[in-house]
Length: 59
Image (cartoon, rainbow, N blue to C red):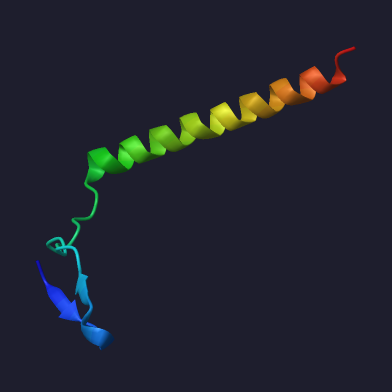
């Protein structure tokens, strides 16, 4: 563990830093999945909004 000494002789303990790596860009299958999930999320949001509008107009 990496320790540093501060003023007054106090020790400060820092966590280990994780390894850094470069993320790979998404391939075509991942892009397609992102589009499908985005469309499904939009349908869900529009559906919830439609239910809210319908419920607020019901008597």
